[in-house]
Length: 393
View (cartoon, rainbow, N blue to C red):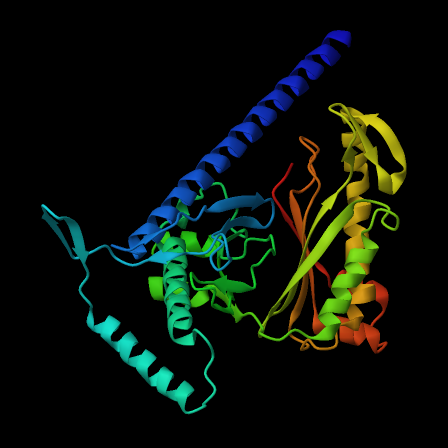
């Protein structure tokens, strides 16, 4: 009997080792596939701009088990947007007096000059004209059109390289960086600003496979893509600012029982809703090896103790965030019933803790309206909150 038990234990250990090695191999392949896909996406972006140059935009990807891969190409912010530079000079003349450069104008350039003349005349006659619109809006529109084309081409022609995804998992290409800092405006060289669009193009892995196998045409595949194309609102409603201040207060060190935040920003998107951004922290480093965790009154703990507590606190943080969205999000009256209230949160760092790198909770305005009116219970409202976990630490 003892021999039999020993053999069973050995077989179980072997099976566990094989499963661990297989999972590790799959994780490595997923990481490799994502890096290849990032490179493809970057190449498509460069090709789309042809002879034009732009400051490089880093393509970042993250995998969430059960959801899929998200590729972030943060165009539109003051520091991470596509900043287009005009084509170089058409002629370079070298002489004993030095080097001179000359540019030739295309027909589109001539049209822009003519448009400016019309706008200057409007201003002279006292007609209202949005400052910088003739330059900034056309440039922004062209950027977004290029981005949309790249996203669709990538999903249709190249996303099959993500071989480890399950059929029900998603592949998303978006210009949302998740930082929220300055993401609601496009900044030009002249300091002119215009509203930014939130663009997200999403495919299901099963549809990618069907396209590859000839079970679906390219046109049918493109028609099934889920696309969000919403523009930032130019005016913000007071209730949006109030909810931002609520989150700021709820996640202060003295009130939060889990993690704390320093600053909450938000972005109002037309026909989409509002996105709140925050980064949360668990501790303050007092020296190289010790930490204070103010929300749970733990002082001078080492790295191991700190990480264990961070991991322990995560489930409550997620639960509290959902509850705060339902309980306090009811104050957002300026949103439509089909618009979303989203709280996008970057989590405190905790290496090898198994908690997400970021979490996004969202709920429709109609759910909060029904809860506020007593049509549904708090438990039902909480069950309708969507939680998306991004990355894993």
